[in-house]
Length: 202
Image 1 (cartoon, rainbow, N blue to C red):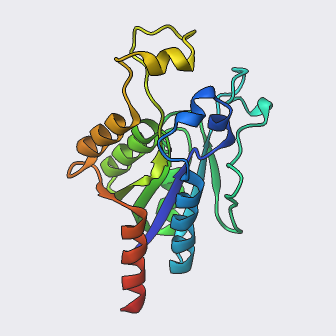
Image 2: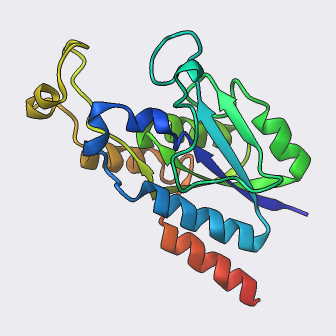
């Protein structure tokens, strides 16, 4: 019997430690993810939590700094695995595929931080592996992206003032455009929850 799962990717304290956090696309990322997770639990779907780590770097993703943990308000329950990855997508450096195969999962819903990076790459890889992917955009969050010529020492103010900076709205639009009809179904939290309720009534 097939089963569905929700992947929560990189909704972690590391990002909140960055100055650009205040300019994120989704101030209610925790609330939206929590709604998805609650609906998944009610359906009996698997919930998998994924964190990103960069050991030995000394940055906010270095586990030694203490920030590689879920944002306040999100807590796994018994039986919900937490994986730690060191690549952008959630598959390459973890046993995620094995875990999903063992659980009989073939429908995968993704959400999390960095709409166009870790969440998108996970959707692409998952699609290539044969999973039916749902990308819940309003349960993702991203941040303005500086132009490639902007030095790493640039301040947030300088990045935001640069007309070449890609806005969060542009990032989301481009990500949805690239994924839709190719790698994933684009959805919203309300749509996913509505579908779950409809299934429960059948």
